[in-house]
Image (cartoon, rainbow, N blue to C red; front, side):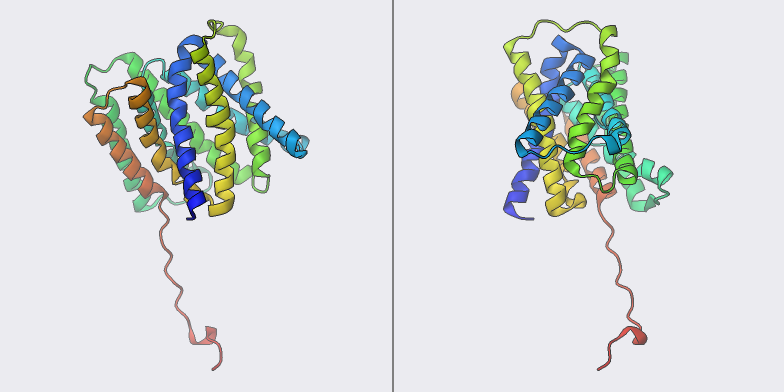
Length: 300
């Protein structure tokens, strides 16, 4: 991996890891639905401005259903679920639970695409499950119902990411990545809008909350998508997915540095197990070279 690709990878992990800290600060003022709606609407506006500056706005009509579905499953639902969860649990714990998304992607691919799980992936999932149990079950204080519900919301968000990754592989092959990033945010904004009248109106924005909403929308969503798709183009999807290992590390780091969240032993152990399990689940199995038969060899 080239130096510039490594810089992009670390920057992407820092931005996506930082999203959990931004959510933790902003969600008490806006609530989960308004925060998620603000995030995707501002991200769409930023990406649309970029497309207009480039004079290259992708077509919407041909794949609008796919954009809407991707926006719902890959942005609207998980963004709202993580925002809901972080009203109760720390940004660090939410970032660690987010790392389970590759496990759900493997399960969805096994069901939808008939891809075999294999012993390696099953071992990785078992390690990840042990990490979740250690993270959620061994808290310094007794586990409350609200904390359990929040943890389940994080896992449901990770499931959404797993479903979205397989859906993109099946239904969105060949669609330009920038178009997916742009119109999936529009689809997410449309999907969330009907819920807005039924949730409490957000409180008055303070400068701190406004700054975190802007950072969440512009840095952790719009810029992060551009970095991610550039990485896919430059180094391939397999290497780009290594960002999954780094997101919880940055999520914990930002939570400790900027939110003064405690760094407990069970958090470190759970994070280590989940990251190790993710590595096993994502690691490619090297293919054995096919034996060369005499008929396949060139003439001397």
